Image 1 (spheres, one colour):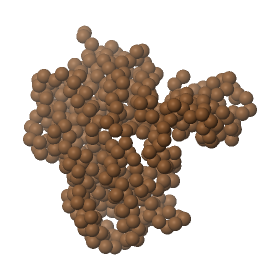
Image 2 (cartoon, one colour):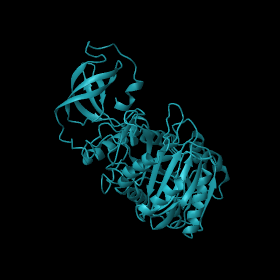
Image 3 (cartoon, helix red, strand yellow):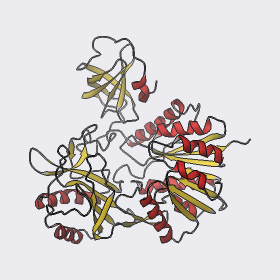
Image 4 (cartoon, helix red, strand yellow):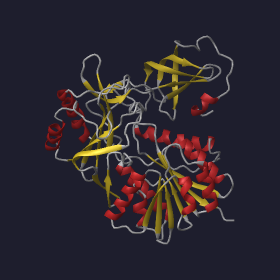
Length: 478
């Protein structure tokens, strides 16, 4: 049984007495779960134990923390024999920080595990017998790749110092950082120095327990090709609210612009809601411009603070080139790009097809897509704001190629049904979540109308268990 489906397994009789909370067991790790934990099996009934920060081939001592009849979660106590796939993490808090799961796993094995996870999802959820899943396309470097970071800001209750970093896995306990090996190295200076500036200014730090304080998050994004940097403070306030408790804000902003020549703009984002959502709906630029420019696939894009753009610029271009290599576009295609965002894939595709329509729920993203089309003098791409399930009946043409790039939750059932009615010759599905990809591919193929040609995983997220995939489907001949 695949390790990511055990929570739904039927309960069985409890095994020997050692299978209880607090027990200390010897265990060999034999697999990695899609959520990043190491996996081992124990006892006559082959119960599964999930153990963070472990590697297949590790022989360990583990303490059971949460115990169910057929599986348990454990905490690593000691490594008795290290796996040949174990490496020294690049970060000293890698075993605590929730930003990465696999810094202790050598990169080649990370790629193998990700390919296996995609295959398992397609077989188990999608019911594909022998899916063609190509080897994962490796990143040029497994570190220093993230082009955007967003750090929660907290005040340490023990030292009264401003801290920024990432939460411990499964909690809201912050792991304070001054640098991070997976982010673009230009961000390290910002992370350490902006914390000190906020401390010096004595600006009130947001407390999620009582919903008081002002500074919630620090967000920084960078154009990897242009070097431009855009910085945003997410604050607990409403638009146009007086910010008298942010004393000397204007002077501090000017100091930042002078200190960091690559900084092209500083923004405030307003999030006054008691929520885990990071960005609020309103953003204002308080210095410079409210966007940075980035070059992607030879085109110029404007990226704002809350614009969705893949965090790994180089690998996003690899995925785009994979599309081009497989589709063999002739220039006569009429294309629909559902969930198009700001036109990241739409506009490069527009240069190789007859016409393309992009649909996206977020109006702000559509506005940016239109701006980017104008900026690049692309006239055969049109954009429409609305839910994908509501816009498919209003297309100006019957598409022969449909590109799907939905959020993690995948496509609405109505979208699948309408695509089956539209009957495009080809469907390309880009996904960051193998389980929902497999589910939707099953829905597209189970009627016999489409067949899955192949799936190409691309590693957008080294040091984590996440993987991006692009699946190619063809309509079967009637």
